[in-house]
Length: 252
Image 1 (cartoon, helix red, strand yellow):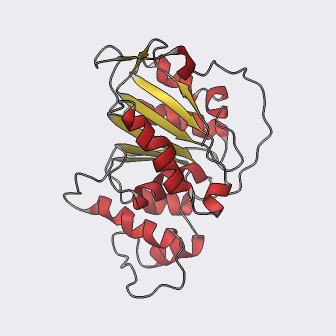
Image 2 (cartoon, rainbow, N blue to C red; image 1 turned 90 degrees about the vertical axis):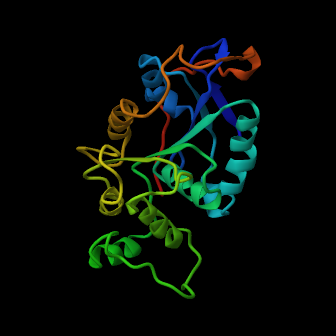
């Protein structure tokens, strides 16, 4: 996977890394164009940003989790990052979640903005049962091995009175008119207060920008100057890109 590092401080490495996963057919540099990196810097947070070119083909081939772990997470841990958060939009949010399914406890937090959460038919079954608090996950052989069949039982862990210490904090943001909003609302009911953010509108950058800024205001990230640093070499840094328009489409 190709990655692009945008450090909080050009001369120092922070202890915290935000790993950004784009939506389907989006490019990682659109996080820069749409102000996601600027929002981190405006808040003077000691958190570096790593933009990952997670092509949609990785999801179709079901190689996303392995590649993300071996090509991104493990190498960044080896470089000294003590806290790693996954930040995903649409299918990128789905990628962050299925990575946690495959590698429990390997990251320190997840931000899922307008995430694809699997097939609507499964969400409809959960809603009919009365929501995640009432739904009983089926046992025995399943009709298929699609990851969303494991995703909803995973979300139920957030309902436990004392969730596992290895369960990363999960922050959810979505537009109330988003085409995936029905499933988002089911997940929202399972999360603690202060972990769910909504805005008017649908599945598009204006909503995602607003949601990211709202979530970023409450994320437990260190402020600049409060954590030990390591020197960053110039070869690690990707120069800022021009804020030019890029045609895109979402197909999650």
